[in-house]
Length: 166
Image 1 (spheres, rainbow, N blue to C red):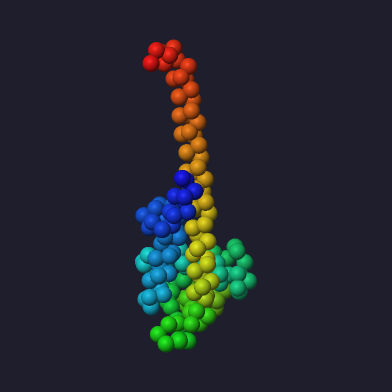
Image 2 (image 1 turned 180 degrees about the vertical axis):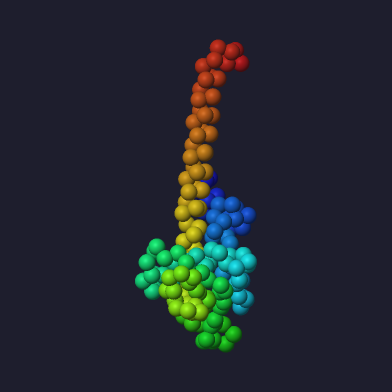
């Protein structure tokens, strides 16, 4: 039962919001972004997506992990190749303005970074995996405890002297 519910938990937004809030907000932000809108600091999903994009930027540009002053100001969607009215996936990008305050990793005035939408979508999906797994284990554990308690209660009642008179 727990595994079944856990497997389908991601189909129920209210459950996902509780189990994997970072995924929930990042996914909503990504949907908003792909619809052609940009994300600013106050928008849903901006914080989660900016953390993912910042991490990706650091990995691609070999920025040491101890550098913490990288900030993203805005994220937007760009696609320069279309087939009819459908974007070609390899040309879909999440573009972001990035700056630093102390280390000047990106130089004065900041710069624009990018990440392919599919790669960003993969990073977003990673946010839910562990949480759903932990939820399934939690549900399994709770179910097991309930079954054990019920077994001992039933066992105790069947050995109780008044149970023989029933």
